[in-house]
Image (tube, rainbow, N blue to C red; front, side):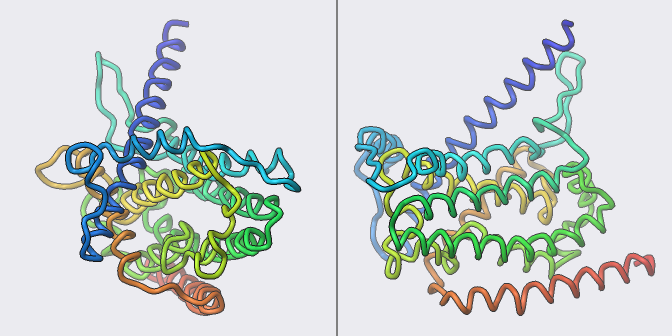
Length: 330
């Protein structure tokens, strides 16, 4: 009984630590994006609240808390209120299978740096990430607004289309690592990261991930010049903040998944493993911000053609080539 209670306590502590770190990173990633975009556009960015603007995320959070939460007439109230939680919650649940470092010993007990180390971690990541589609589609459909509906339909079509390319990009990784366990996939990159061993899969993954997170140049579900703000046009207050925070939690999740599948996870010289993992995770959101500042938005037909006519056939070809090389013992 004591061992069971201790195990539950350790798991609760790990969950609390992961949630605190993820929410803290998401809040300050918003500040980092505003600062970097300011530099890219030759302006300052936020610098008034606190030293160098470091308290800006706290001010933004208080502003959202104090804003009135408006529910328009004509909406399906229950679905309208739940949709933002689906987007943020799906991304948060996915961190349950993300390994942040190797197992260490504490008071004579092995402590894995993952909430749940399962042999089907890759499938769980896919399943939970696909739930975000429901939040976007339901938020757009139930808002009783034509712009929101168009944004929701666009978001659902885009996310479903690029999930296929994303899955095809990760199949060669699982084939090479001979496992769906995320810890095993990281350990398989002890000598060489899969970004080098599987460059085509890495390229497919990065492009598909940009589309999955609705970031420029793939932000067609929001597209301010066409749809005002797309699927979350009618949202305000903390429910809009949930959509907003969910986007940045997704960015951090994307950084974690990229580090695990292609950048060697926590492996690296000189620095502690957890620090290596953190640096690799943060490099991906910075890349996404740089992309936002550099590339124009695609047309919707170009977006769908890229996914179905280019990425999917290339992903299938890469799986065949990887299978042939593995069968040949290379």
